[in-house]
Length: 110
Image (cartoon, rainbow, N blue to C red; front, side, top):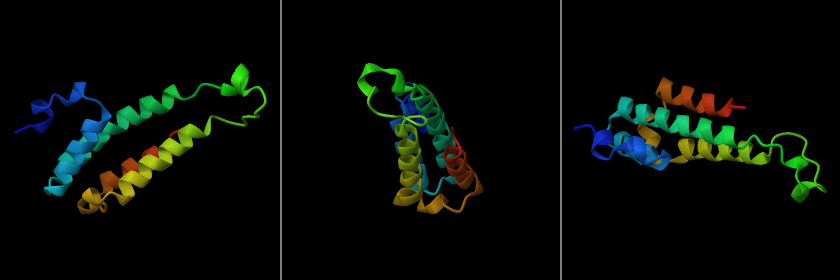
């Protein structure tokens, strides 16, 4: 059975991919778990792209000096990596090279 088709994941968003990845990982389905996480990664990339606005030019931030991109992107990447690295559901795939590469790619996003 293909869980993603059952739940029509493509229309449900990032959280669904994460939940499906956790379920696959807990049930020993490494490759399917990582496939779902790679789909989740696409949402991360798109979300980080949406946060690239320079807020230092707006009237709301005219008294704050913003040196580089809003810290939200860095915080978001750190939170996602922490989620991957501390989520017990992913203990079974932590040594998988694809899982490690996924974490590395997210850490290196601009």
